[in-house]
Length: 560
RNA sequence: CGGGGCGUGGCGCAGCCUGGUAGCGCGCCUGCUUUGGGAGCAGGAGGUCCUCGGUUCGAAUCCGGGCGCCCCGACCA
Image 1: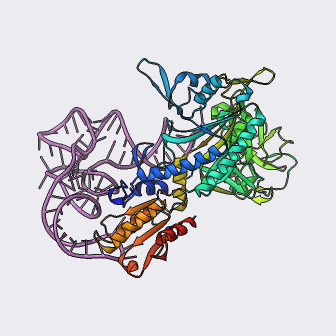
Image 2 (image 1 turned 135 degrees about the horizontal axis):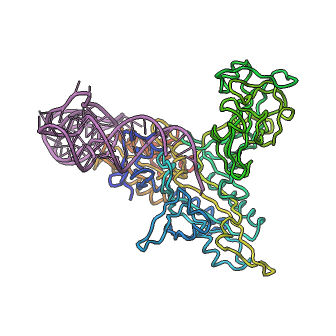
């Protein structure tokens, strides 16, 4: 029974003062979620219904590709995390039991699932396998934020695939691409599948599913036929007009000018005619001088991938001796390997002279300094891919798929015997979806001034029936009857039977955002009609009372 | 981890500077009226002023420690 008079839907007129993101404000105002502590949220009944709708869509599509649902514990022995080398992760919550044994609260379940598979799978005949679960994940986030978008505890769907070899993994991965595409399509979200960084987990391939929205923490680069997280995006640079070349580099006096802006303005050249030198300390390799065009930015993730090792910016005292003084460094004469960004074309550039208050102009890569090439810059709106300009949009990551390889099967001993009796490591993939983020992204993407405007697939209720009549009135009696009929037809109806002013009921209905509102009032009832409001766009329609329940559902089915 | 801000009834806030009876709007409860866009009148309930300590005759207010929460950046397997 979902009569609003007895349902816990704690709506608020005012948003919490500290809320910033639209989804944060509206989800609290609409009574979907309540905060318990930093990054800790309770799902109220209506919010949980939306969450469960997402869960059910995911479940159906994963079952359809042969996924088998199970459930694994949140509380894990620390041992398996030590074996995979993940015990040291800062975000991992750690605790001890009463005997002092080290335990962890799982942030994902590779360790657990792989431990079981190591015990249970013996033969190539047992493969492939797709296992998944919905489970609470715990992460000691450095900074939870934006309501339900980034929390310390959240439910995640994780699937894991187990295959004999790379080819099998590719097939399992493709199955997930198909399932994920269908899942996100069914949610009604606007979404992109983008290429993504494989991160510190290692692995051979990864995509993220991104939902564009203002509160998104990621940025995606998009062009016809191209979609990538800007963390790894690659594009052709916009050209820059270089000054006429010189026979050899020439010093210019640039006292106190240490930024690209200052130097470019002083010399009357575009930012892109400068070379920006960015010294880093790469693990196992030492000092490297990264050089990009003056109007470009070094992309730390692409740089890490290009170097094949983690790196950090070098401190002035770490490069002063080998290169030069901070603010005036450049590749000419630098006593460190130079990594030159692909966007730097041939020609004469302005660079630091490696002595205070001087720059060089007419510096030509190759002629004046030796280098290694790599693509290490962050792409920008207007760069091109295949001749098409890219645009950059903020988005929230709602899912990811990842080829793990043997990153977990090897340390945990998950092997199988092939036809020849040879023991081989199982090749794994992992695939996550955050239902809470899908819910929040739907709110972000559909909200208007009045509140949420759910896609049909995710709305907490399919219909909201608003009765304007008082107890004992004709309208009330009709609304009761209609409520019964709609339920008998299988509809998921929220019935606002509260004794409140119409304005309050309308405002609450629009805030909660069910796709279709049915209004039963004296005015339309006496006219032999039932009034409907389509939430998205808030346009009003009416249907005759005769056969009204069916007509309502017919209309509902046509909504987005 | 760096920077900034905040903690007063369910929500939003004032009061703090300049110490002296804890207030406002919304919400909530009771009654009557009202019912197509957040109603009116009357009556009422509800607060360890985050916490611990200090100063003081007296602390929401001043001082110190702690805790909690938010935002920006770093980080985000």
